[in-house]
Image 1 (tube, rainbow, N blue to C red):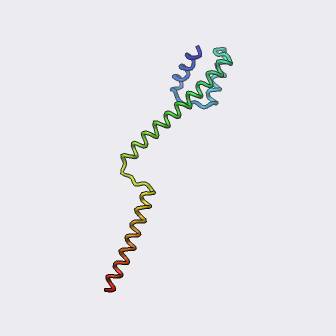
Image 2: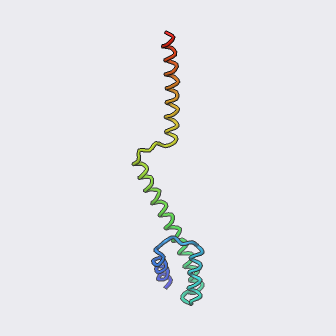
Image 3: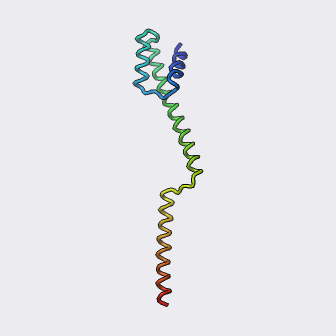
Length: 106
């Protein structure tokens, strides 16, 4: 029965990540209605919280992986690379300026 309730709650809630308060509220109602013992409610609460945390971690990992693949395909320069290129350009401009001074003196 505990497994059936767990599956039913997850399915009914669209397998969304639940907050602890919502889970506690839902299990308290089941206990009040006599559909679940307080011991089973505690077990169910912990299982749903663990399941929600796992789902959240999995979703985060999938998002990171997808975002990484997406960003690797973009031709975007990172701030560090931009700073390095800017420093190189400034150095080259400075050197060019010095060469132009030397040429104009000749």
